[in-house]
Length: 117
Length: 243
Image (cartoon, one colour):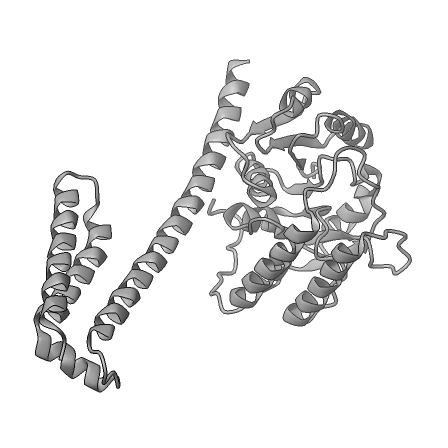
């Protein structure tokens, strides 16, 4: 069984994560579309932390017998990987758009200079 | 029929020492050839020198890399309605006197893109350093396999394309070390590619921006792009008239 203190600490951490994300959305420092993954991460971690029987059951499914909180770490790691991968796609898209903008700008600038001469 | 409007696309980055003679040579070779220099974020006076020689100059606000710069040139050619575009480097390694070999197959409508190959006739004296030679051979093999056509020089930036090629490359052009991927792209879009043997000169100024470690990085990256690109859905470019 998961030690009670671990459950409490992990629950508090999850709630903090959720609150920080919500505050970032409120103050418009984080767009909703990027916040969703983080919120999902926080909620899943909170559920697994607080619902101790559930964590034990899942640990049993995946063959973790000795130390159920390991599942918590594994799930947290997985979600972080997903968030990072998501960011890589966002960065790729941004740099593609950046190239397009630079090309557009340069072509328009050339036109403008030619007109003026 | 009037001669097709043609343009030379010259990507250049910090080529202040070579760009003037490149433009002069192009002019001397064919006065009817317009020239657009794409200045890829130079920190020297490349753009000013080119503009003073009468070339159109498109100044990118920051360095995009060769692929982004070349694509800008194709976009320029597309927007200004050119029928034929030749692409050659701003460092002077591509000799304009070789251009008729590239333009011939386009004029005869035998190909949509003509690539000047240093190796096509097998008698080339061009001996790049080992790492570069290995890379060129590897990509020639891989591209030949993927396209089922013999391709000898996939890294040549000395090319001529017709309107179909201009359209394709303006819409979609790979990033750094773009020629290899572009070759495969051309086949996937069912454009006709033809290689012709050309001689290239040693670089007159500056050094190639591709060092040994970087070439390995590019080799791996481009290989990945090629293999993944095979599974990418592509559209055949539409006929003239919808731009």
